[in-house]
Length: 152
Image 1: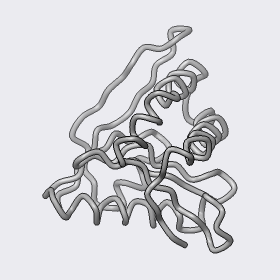
Image 2 (image 1 turned 90 degrees about the vertical axis):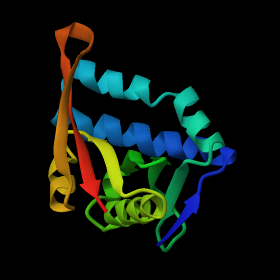
Image 3 (image 1 turned 180 degrees about the horizontal axis):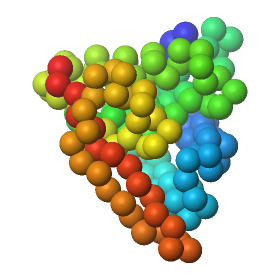
């Protein structure tokens, strides 16, 4: 397993990992309006801007297949996704460890927005809830998530 900085030519794989994970996992936790909101939030422009700003990393398995991605912006972990077929194999943990170690070099706390599907994982990693948000989406659906913090 290895983690490498994503380059502009990696855009398609970062988008594929992000969108495939949202489309397959999030419907188990969120309404359709919220899933569409997530897909629109992680649009081409946002992904490419993060790659161009050297904020995006890719995780590769031993066969050198890209299986996950994480975006790190200052002291914030964003867009941490592992392809559904690779979940449960430690790739998400490796990406989270990598992001936390990277952030700890310059900051004393980590902030993230936790989806419903990831909240329990972050609680086990020592994060605490510091905020809750609810956004009204299409069809009068709501996207709910927690803002979480971890002291380093």
